[in-house]
Structures are given as structure tokens and as C-alpha cells.
Image 1 (tube, rainbow, N blue to C red):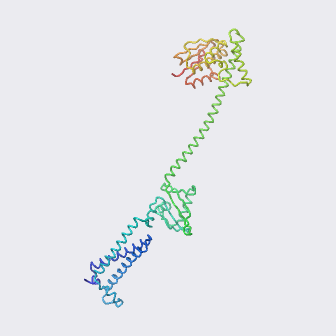
Image 2: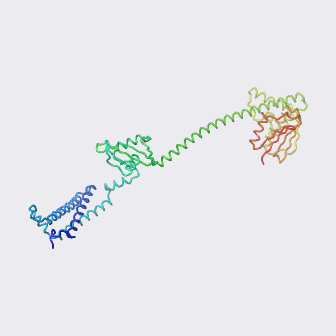
Length: 429
């Protein structure tokens, strides 16, 4: 078989040299991988031996090539080197095959180990794939560890690579918004990042740890909630003002109604007393006495103001009592139609009759009321035989209180004075 140095400038020569270079590179990679993964000593020695053997064979072939291209023998070559050059090329090819098998076994073992164990490369890859940015730096700002996300954030904020942690931290402190010990920074791209900075002690040395999290969506939701809270506080303030105003209006309304009712009751009692003095034979003296005593007790603060007109306190049917009260002040009633059966409508009609009877005596100087009831009690019209009003009737006191009561019940009230006094009440169907 031909000596290896004689195969120069042939395909076999170049194949042997390329193969040994590949084996050297593969052996070094296997050795570095074993050291970084903290493999067992035997595994590291095997990788180192393979790399060393491949390198030794590479040196022999390089010297062999130099020896083959010399025009004259070089005395610096030792006899054992010349004997190595004169070995058949098959021996070197066999050695390369053995080294290739060893390297394949080492690389296969590395792949199996990486699949079943956590290696520094796996940790590094995992850190780079995290959605949060992570950086660990020395106190002087030297970056010791940073993942891809942190580099991307730094490039978005500064336009340069992440190389100085102190400079980057200063930018965050200057442009960020402090919130619960952390900083919120908005970038030109519209994203919001939350930065957290803490100290990390390891083997007696202090390191700076910085993390960055994308909180764009949370920040947007928080801002929306903050705006809604502001609007809700404004609505709450306005509702409180409206509530206070409504309370004041309700109290004023109740006071006005109470004053009007008291005024009407006092006027009715005075009318009853006057009619009794003028026509004692046509007046129920007991009713006049009872009503006068009740009013006197209230005026002397010996009793609370009655919830119903004084003349309507006794008995159960307020409408019939109102008709009796008309007689006590000298007003006769002419009823056309059937009185309503609904209790609420009877109460409203009782108040209307009482108010109209009192106004007939005081203002119209009349003595008769005509009550027209149509549409099964849904329309009630009250007129009197007194003098027509002089101009438009200004609703106040009892009439205003009656209108409010009718409208609260869902009905409507119409007061006319063109040809004579007329009060019409319509209830919904």
C-alpha cells in the first residue's frame, strides 16, 4: 500500500486532511460541551482524549505534507517522524475512522444527555424565550446576563444594543412612572413596560437584577377603569346633589300641602260656624262642635295635625262625610250619575267636593253644587250656582293640592272660569 506522503496532490490526500480537520473540530466541540454540562470525569476524559488524538493525527499529516513538498531532505525531521510519513495511507484512514466512531458516540451521548437533563444551553435558550426581559449586571453596569427580550426592549427605548445597565437604568428612572416600587415606561411603539429592580446577593457579591414585563393590555384596562371611576364619582356627586335637592323639594312640597290643608280646614270650620250662627236649625251642632274642638286642640298643640280634613275624620266613607259637610256650611248637592265605587276615586271626589263647597260659599256666594259623573265614574265635573269668577282662577292652596293628588293618581284636572266655575277631573281607563 502506498505511503501516505506519496499520496500528495491526490484526492485521497485531500480527503484525509479534510477528514482530520473535521475530527479536530468535532473533538473540541465534544470536549467543550462536556465541560459546560459538568459531565462525569470519565466522560470528559474520553472527549479530551478523542480531541487530543485527532489533533495529534492532524499535526502528523501537516508535517507529512511539508515533508512531501521538500526538494531535499530536512535534517530537522527525526527518524521516527520519517517512519510515520512512510506508513501506508490505510493506517491513517483507519485511525480517522476509529476517531470518527468515537466522536459519533460522544455526540450521540451528548444528545441523549441533553434530552434527559437540564444543561446550561437549555437554561440559556429557555431564558431567551421568556416573554419577560431579564438582566443581571455588576454594580459598575457591566451586563453579565440578558435575554433576547431585554435586548429588544433596550433597542426600542434607546435605539442601541444593551451594553450598559447603569445607563439603561437611568433612562428608566427619568422617563418612567413610579408605581408600588416599580416603574411604568411607555415606548414610541405604544407599548407599556413594567420594570422591577432589585439586588441579588451571590457568594458574597451584590448584583443588580432588572426585569421587564409587557403590561400594555393591563395598563389600557387600568386606564379605562380609572376614567370610568372618575365618571362614576362625578355621577355619584350629581346624584347626591339631586337627592339633596329632591329631599328639599319634597319637604317644601309637603310643607306647602300641609299649610294648604290646614288653611282649608280652618276656613271650612269657620264657614261651618258662620252657617251655624245664621241657620242653627239646618246645621248639625255636634259636627260643628267636634270639628271646632279638633282644630282648637291642634292650634293649642295638644294634638298632631290630622292627615285628613277635620270634617272627614269621623266615620269610614269620606265621600259621604264630605256631602254632609256641605250641608253644614249651607251648600246643597245635586248629583247626576252614579258615585264611583273605587275607594281612591271616592277619596279624591271627597276632597274636590269639600274644596268646591268651601269656595262656593267664600268666593261665589252660592249655595249649590252640581256633580256630574259620566263614563262609569271616569269623568267628574263640578259646577256651582254662584257668581262667575272675575278672570282666570289662580290655583293655590286647596285647588293646587287637589291637582297634585289627582295627577299622582294618574288623572288630570281642568279648571274653567269663562262662563262660570267648572272643575273637571278625568281618570285613565
